[in-house]
Image (cartoon, rainbow, N blue to C red):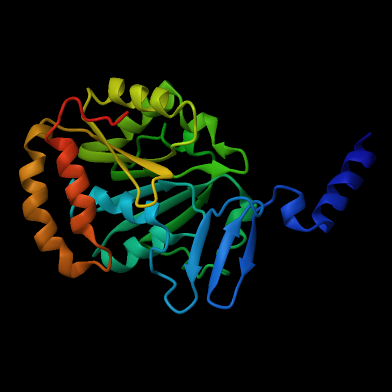
Length: 265
């Protein structure tokens, strides 16, 4: 039986990745995309500008800057093509960034996507993100959740227990940012779980193309006052970034002004 399984695995490795569900890099003239198959794009890198955020949902996730304009520590669950990691390392001074990726085949593609090597301020860990957040040794200012596989959002990253561990992993004033798919029928359930753990200090905005919903959950006591700070902060942050933070901030402020009823249906 073991010989049969080993033979089968060997044959799967010999197949084109799109037939096995394994991640692969698809290279075009100008861009490289990360895929599990050809039905969906996981990540995109522009060859001429590898640190640029191409996909709208990644730009929307950078809305965490409205809560934490200069975070010291960021952790991200789900490496993908490393778009968010590369952007943050380039544009946020002195940030320490840790990426947690469960799939070693994704990590094996890091050179294709020009993800920098591990160093004093950047590290990629091959681990289950649900296990990682249970470790309280190093709290973070920002926790980015973008954990998807060929079947969609990883279920161990959607439970009430997981969101409780995320809350505990954040410093006071920290923010959880979760990328969700509007097509996921359990999206509203996940948001409810986050609201319950973060005391309703949650807002959600649509990404630019409306396929993704980005959820921000805040750990602190000054949540009702953040809308004013956001208006001031976006002016200061603008010159430091290559994305349009104003449009993102405007969506967030509109939701903040509706607090505590700030989750769009």
